[in-house]
Amino acid sequence: MLQLFITGFITIRWLDVIDVLLVALLLYQLYNLIKGTGTINIFIGIVAIYLLWYIVKAFGNGIAHGNTGQFISVGMIALIIVFQQEIRTVSFSSRFLQIFLKKVRKVF
Image (cartoon, rainbow, N blue to C red; front, side, top):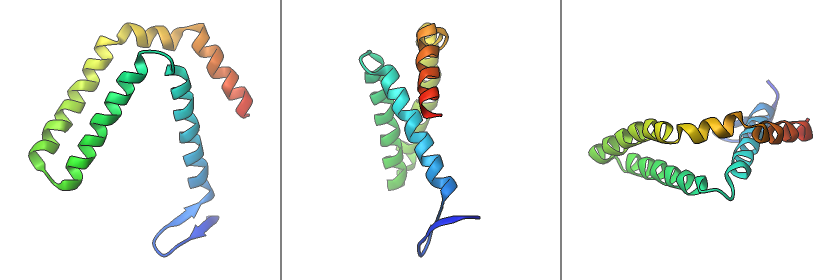
């Protein structure tokens, strides 16, 4: 195992750095895909609800944590059902595939 940094409590490997960079690249590409559309507002709302869930979980409030957790699980299913047509349009459009393949070719 090739280690990059060793601190008192955590070991950072090259694989960890590559993993973080790949996730950052995917999030950046997702942002570029939804930038300029109404979808960005929905995405920000989902992130805000997740942040609220983590904050409530950190404070140890069981009832609020359970309620926000149920809201998230039902809300994700509802979002998929409500935006089914838009998801299908974006995922199967030739523009989406062209943009994705163009970005992949630039990286590699």
